Every structure is written in structure tokens, then in C-alpha cells.
Image (cartoon, rainbow, N blue to C red):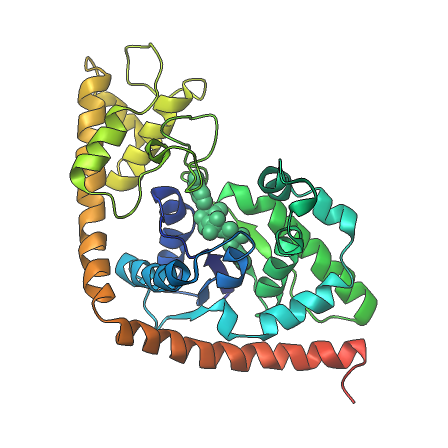
Length: 327
Ligand code: TYM
């Protein structure tokens, strides 16, 4: 049994990229592993957040995970800020992580562009808090989308350096990136990943988009001037749509290509939208019902926090002891 762990930021928009990159793999892995899944609210505040919105988004993310099939009896589900050992370990790791390592992080470079000296220390330090998230729980496997690979490599380096200096303390985690669905691209720009912070809503399909919106977004998805429905890495827009089609229907790409022989983009996009909506509907219905009972959601997060605190405190006692602050 492996210790599997992943986390997502609470955001008003969770999109199908988040779902296929991280949520669905966790649902599958919870049957045979020790799963930990949490909502990284302290990562979210590395960029400005409206407090009332943030609270709503934490509950929304919780509802989505449960609606997607996360079972709190099988997966330890909690809120990062409730387990103060995450920020405590981040501080300790700050003291062994090099500025140069963090300056190389492409996500930091992207998010800090144009901000000059006003970029926050929190945004810079984001990957160290993420390393702490992972290392606190003796994590073997971290399922994430492709964009988090560099952060995972840093977490491994941080763990190895700490172990070399203070003796075996942390498990060095492995990254798990699924073959298909690890990088869902933006519908309006298939050169870049689908992202909730994209300039246009046409970039992503939110897990809560209604049928009409999904249809509009699929129809306006950027494709090329080709006429066949055939998978080709060079035809990025179409390749992305075929990937999404395959993920929501469970059909092989070859099978989908065959079904669309002699048909064009119009039919393909309309039917893709139908499949996406059919896939999302049960998740949306469950999430909406769950959101009507905040007390229930808070109770699940409370129970998760209590269990997570116990695990995290055990590891922190070891860390405090090996670095010499435990008297
Ligand atoms: P976040 O909240 O940006 O994204 C959550 C997960 O969704 C994946 N993802 C995608 N997968 C496929 N296609 C896409 N277009 C796409 N966009 C996002 C991300 O790779 C991620 O797996 N830093 C993390 C949160 C985090 C974390 C951790 C993850 C904090 N601590 C510890 C793992 C372990 C993040 O910002 O994810």
C-alpha cells in the first residue's frame, strides 16, 4: 500500500484539466492506497483573495471532490490551513532551500511577470510550502498534472538534501503523471494549458458549466483548417479535443476517429459538447446538493483536520528532534 497525496487550490473555477489531472486519479487510487487529499488555502493566498469568496471556494472544492467520488472514509480529506505543521515545516525547509532553486521555477516566473519588486514573498516561497505538504506525510506517490512536475522535482531535492544533512527523515516522493489528460490545453489557445486564470472564459470548461455554455465553448474551440478528425500532435487543437472526448466517454482515440470518418468539425464539436455535459451532469447535481448542507461539509473537514494533525505532528516531532530544537 502506497501513501498517495495530492492537493488543489480552492478556486471558484475548477475545470476539466484539474479533474482529469488530479481529482479522477485520486478517486481511482483511493481503493488500494492510503490517500490524502487537501485544499491548499494557504497556497491560494499567495495571490490576492477576497475573504468571503475564499471561504465559499473552500466549501465548493470540498463539495466537488465528494461529488467526484472521493470517499472521506477512504481518503483523508482536509483543509491545509487547519494543520499548522504545514507552515511550520515550510519554515524549516526554507532554511535549507536555495534562492536559486526557487528562482528557476517556471510557475513563479510566469506568475511574477510584470510585478517587479511588488511580487510577494509568499508567491516565491510557494514551492517550499508544497514540499512541506508532501514530506509531512511520508508520501510515496503524488498524482498531478504535467505543470506541477518541476515543483515535485524540487520537493525531491529538498527531501534528499535534508536527509543527507540530518539523517533519514523524509520519504523521497515519486511524481505520477497520467499519460492521457495530464495536460489539457486551453480551448481558445491550444498552445497553453487550460487554466482558470486565463484571460477568456472560452479557455476552459468549468466543472459547473451548464449545457449551453459547454456547447458554446466547444463550438468556438480553436482548431485548424483540416477536414479529417484524426489525432495528430501537430494539430494541437483537435488533438486536445480528441483527448477530452476520449476521457469523458472512456473510448479509445482510434475508435473515435473511426466514428467520425467522413464527418467534419461541426458534428464532432457538437457531439463532444453533449458527451462533456453528460459526464458533468451527475457531478454537478451531487455538488449542488452537498453545497446546500454546509454543516455537513465542515464536519467532514473538521474530522479530516484532526486526523491530519496527528500524522503531521508525529513527523514534526521527528524534524524538531533531528534539527536540534527539541529539548
Ligand atoms: P492547482 O490547484 O493549480 O491544480 C490542481 C491540479 O490540477 C492539475 N492541472 C491540470 N491537469 C491537466 N491539465 C490542465 N490544464 C491542468 N491544470 C491544472 C495540476 O497539475 C494539479 O495537479 N501547486 C498545486 C497544488 C499543491 C499540491 C501540493 C499538489 C499544493 N501542495 C502538494 C500536490 C501535492 C497547484 O497549484 O495545483
